[in-house]
Length: 139
Image (cartoon, rainbow, N blue to C red; front, top):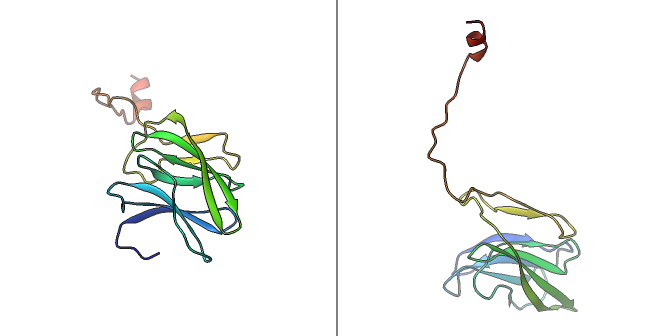
């Protein structure tokens, strides 16, 4: 895909006909879908920013993280060579670890998520590593 804007986080639909991705062409990161290898058109999936799109296995839903890290689900209806976007609903709040790539994945049926989450606040407690601790037991 060639664009004058940044495009990232590509996700190919399960049937290989659609490509979801993130672009900053609106001035912030949003999730879009374009045909992959056929037709033309572009559909914006997120309304208030979005990251990390993932398709449900049947292609009828796209999951993405809003910019406030709420997990969102967008209903997708395919008719011939076009898409329509149905309801876009928040699912749950995430606390992702940033800078570690895409922060989540979803099961094929879209019912379970695994999220690379951080703690709400970082601990100030130092970590103590004891090496050769078995020799201390002998004393």
